[in-house]
Image (cartoon, rainbow, N blue to C red; front, side):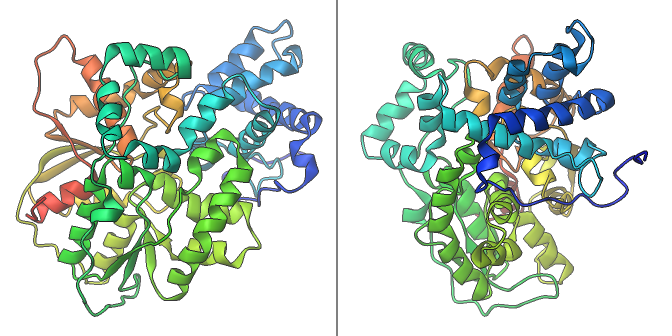
Amino acid sequence: MSEREGSLEAPTRHPIDWQNPEFYSVESVMKEMERVFDICHGCRRCVSLCNSFPVMFDLIDASPTLELDGVPKEMYWKVVDQCYLCDVCYLTKCPYVPPHAWNVDFPHLMLRAKAIQFKQGTATKFRDVTLSSTDRNGKLATIPVVVQFVNAAAKMPSMRSLGESAMGVDRNAWVPEFTTKKFRSNYIPSRAYTPKDGAKTKGKVAIFSTCYVNYNEPGMGHDLLKVLDHNEVPYVVVEKEACCGMPKLELGDIDSVIALARKNLPVLAKLARDGYTIVTPIPSCTLMFKQELPLLLPNDADAQAVKAAMMDPFEYLIGRNKDGLLKTQFSQPLGRISYHIPCHSRVQNVGQKTREMLELIPDTKVTTVERCSGHAGTWGVKKEFHAMSLKIGKPVFKQMSDAAPDYISSDCQLAGHHIEQGIGLLKKDRPATTTQLAHPLTLVRKAYGLPE
């Protein structure tokens, strides 16, 4: 029986069967990669997304048969190493995702392969575990005196060369600074507003601050609180917060993902059942609670309650606007904004809510770029992948730069910094510009005329 082309129904996702011993079978995963790679070879629609697909197709095209059967199976791992679980192939390109009978879920197949690699151990395991331990790194790096040393070392060529040799972090890759004033220790508690529920939104919000906002750029978190306060939305900041687990998921360390979930889910589920909408300022963290943890823990009531309560900040704000509960009296125009929608925002499948919000601001022109920046968390800073991350992001750098913006912006601040670095490389022989990098939350705070 012939199979019809897919993409005729909305994509669905199967739970991740990580507790089944077969999940970690090398023989089984190789058989499934062979099946899926052969389907990809016959389609090739995803060739322009990331480097997994060009690597796969190059292996096939260089094989003696010009088919997948000419590629040694041990070479499949080269494809796995290039995947950083952006999920864009699943949501936007692949015509054979479930409910199609071919049942192709390339990102979760790569996750399974990465989980096997992690269990077996790799040459870079120490480096990878260290980089993905964002909560621990933040706690250590933000100790007084230590934080000044860490930030200074990140700017010293000699120390960056040492870091490249010892840890495999590319000496030229942008790396975040650590703050001396952590968000969770310095935020202003909410005023006692009366919650106002709307048809689309709850009237009170819980903030999952994320490792990055807490330890690296707390200003984004403070800006979110100021925007909520300006709109008279009462909020709380989540207590006893641990890392969302996305860095560990990208590594294939599922046991650590589950351990972190067991810390976060009871606290978040209580807030969800108490009527709070839960938001995070980082799309990857939002996606973790919206999609990955519910698929890893499909029978966990807490995971499902948190999934139902979790929203992107701009999904929430646009919902408030549709409810007639958002203040739209903006006092400061922002000029030209080049806005990048990151992969982990796109795959939440809620539309371009950040763009909609920015376009509410008078005398503000938004140019939207909907393509992967190539950074993808820790993947883009690694020595073996940094050059490729810049190559993947080059079309984004060019499109955003060509708009001659006053601001460049991305919901993913890591992507924003990567784009800023990439634009700098494009313009290294051109006159300097006044373009600034600012997170969309910061831009909205500015547009409201609220102080820093």
